Image (cartoon, rainbow, N blue to C red; front, top):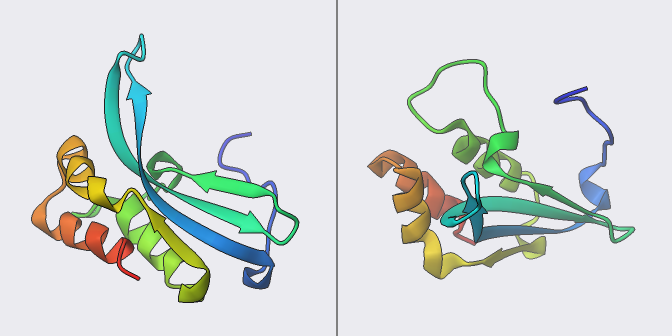
Amino acid sequence: MFNGKTNEFSSGEIMSVEVEAYQHAVGRYKTRKRWDVQMTFTTDSGKKYCFQPGEFRNNVPTDMRYWLVAMLRVKERYDPGIITYSGVGNLESVVSDNELTDAETQILYQLFRP
């Protein structure tokens, strides 16, 4: 029911990958704003699949935020020519809102580096 694979695509079926820093409402009444990162994959049929930090989970405790490492690994699997970046000017807000360490901040900037 949760965290189950619902579909699978080969990397050749992915036409574009967007790495985006975005702001969204959080909290019980959605009155507070927070900056995060998401990856959106568009298939050759035009269907979009969006993955946010909470969807990257790790059962092994690490010193790093697992979603950062996982997103970077996913990004490295695709041709740089199909990857776009948006919200790059808001990375400091992502760092602040997620209370990233210096090492995590370096990974974040690698994620947004072409």
